[in-house]
Image (cartoon, rainbow, N blue to C red):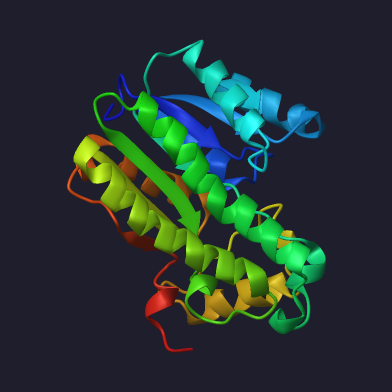
Length: 253
């Protein structure tokens, strides 16, 4: 059990299709303990049974509000006085800004996407780092649309690009404290947020036909990669964007 005696938080649980669930489950399978965050009571009917399945605690968290972030971490501290890892799997953009042209993105929509999808990593990492008293690992989730134009990904692509840049700056800040920060660039997965992208089924089909492995990645494979990155098997890895996409990123199509 490579994660025995490791404990940490996994942000962004919504339902059984969430990448955050795949990460939490993989960590638990390897002996780690997890506390989940979820947005609000609307998601409890899906979150509670999943968390109970692995004996995990779960607390609400709205990353757009500093007061909510502080309250979430207070809840964590009430259970544990320290943590070893954090998995950040939170992203959002208004559906209207994921359709049509990027140039038509609203000012409000741009701010929301960058705040929730990018700044939330900075804000939660600051709190999490204070609890990583013996070092630790932070993992966030990104996507290929950060570096190449993906139809209808629009402002989320910009947010993910900023997320990856933020990861590198966090690496420089937190490295002296023996805290590692990495990003996983997952291939397209049929999650709740992905369904907001127009033509998403076409993206899935395209990747499955062009990726070297001739299929799409599944959430459990991303979860396994996250479990590796929070384990002591990856203590020399920081500042990296690791692709878990069946090889699609190397192709020129």
